[in-house]
Length: 513
Image (cartoon, rainbow, N blue to C red; front, side, top):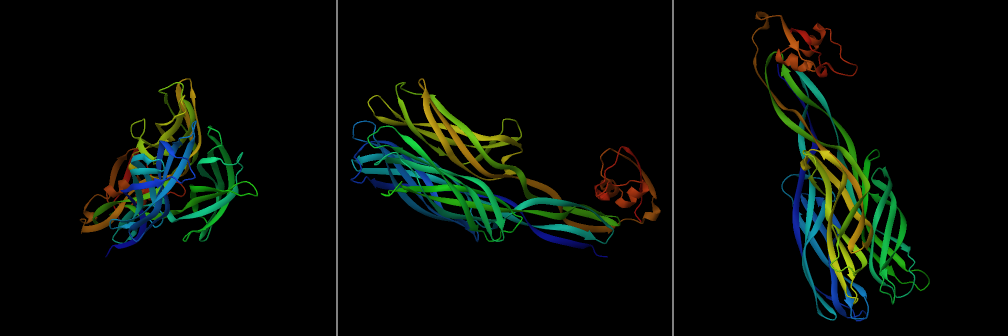
């Protein structure tokens, strides 16, 4: 008689592949003639803007630009701050190691390695720097599961494996237009940034419809003034995006990222605000599989080879605002805080306060603009850390993070001679836990047992509380249902005999028929 083996191939979690790419910057920025001459470079910021991000056919491709922003002080009287920007394009392609990977956008993060910026003339700025771009791609393991066994006196204990898999993922860039009221003409725009606050999402076959709010803040210096102020604008969003593979019943995790904002003068009314932003949507589908967790034969020796099935399950839904602070003693108590810009690093795992736990957070830098009594501007960089309030049992390898973090509201000032910066960080996405479940990978049958008619027909076994009936029967090569029947054990409704546990008692073990 031949053992019948039934199998099924599933897509299990296969870990993550990461790489770092260096994006060098070497350029000259020309200051237009309509802007005042450069007196002093106050601060230079380099940030990546990713327009294309896609993984397919074991290759990741990314395309975008590094936004190089220079803040400089003019030679005019007072603390006259100006801004100039240049885009430095890049295009990257990376061949992934042999294997299967999730199709769609990869996780992308990065950090500034160095930045050297200097004025080589009144209207020419030399910029040298490098940015490290990190790319994370999720791998898929094609695992062959044993779902059932039959014949050859086989006894099996099966278990249901539950988890979720990414059914589809998509990113798309959109534009939104509105108007924003500024107090007067000839304002000097220093920065326009924003965040997307997600609200609800509806999933239909092949598409998702997302609602939320774009919160945009324009930082400017009014004409003839040395003060830096801001104006906020909220733009309601309802956007539909085609997502091949999406189906009703899928769970949608989505977030948005503001890529850039522009203002265009309009003589008939308020300036027109155009926001370029990217919508990221992931569709997650619940899955269940039946797998053989253990097996033995009542008629012949049995060897099983173990395997591990790794599936993703929910650990925490992320839609929260984190408060962070940065501060330090000012080198000069008479310095006046004019404003602050904040850059964030990647959201990464770190060891928790308690042993055997992990938390998630990141680093950031507050770039604080201060003016002295002479009106000269200086930028002080103050590093800070932030993290999610929860901690989780396990290590970083036990979790898979799909989330986005962005700077919301920033408040800066000073108390006495101490600088104080308060930052609101919006985090959206989800944290998944890697569930590693041991299963049977293969079964091999050996020689038959001696004729049981020559041995005892009944054994006595003193069971400990909580022992599984299946494990006891396996020890004596008996059938679990015979053991339960001989001892009048009744499983709870919905519980198979193989999963039944015992109390501390003496059991009768009948030999297998």
